[in-house]
Image 1 (cartoon, rainbow, N blue to C red):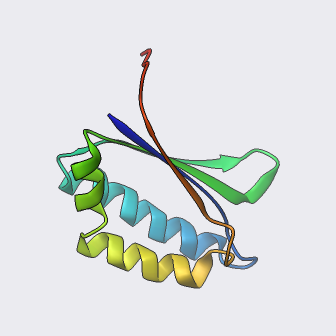
Image 2 (cartoon, rainbow, N blue to C red; image 1 turned 90 degrees about the horizontal axis):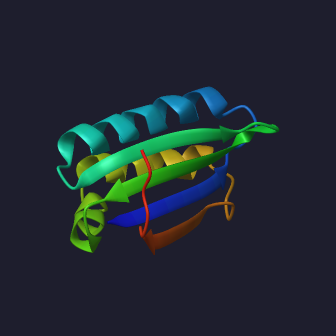
Length: 100
């Protein structure tokens, strides 16, 4: 499994449209992409404009395919409008352990 963690800040005054855009992205990714196992969106408890996404894909090919979808293109356009430039960091990792 490949985990993708995304951390970013949202521009002041853009929180609500950002939330609508990421909700669409998370739903479409999880329901339309068989390689997506999990898509979580979390907000920092001390900063309501700082968000972290945790996405889990079956393999690197599934993550690569995710980045070619129309809903990912729409998400990137929304991110360009709502996310503070330079604030986004992406980390990919291989999941080693899981407890449910």
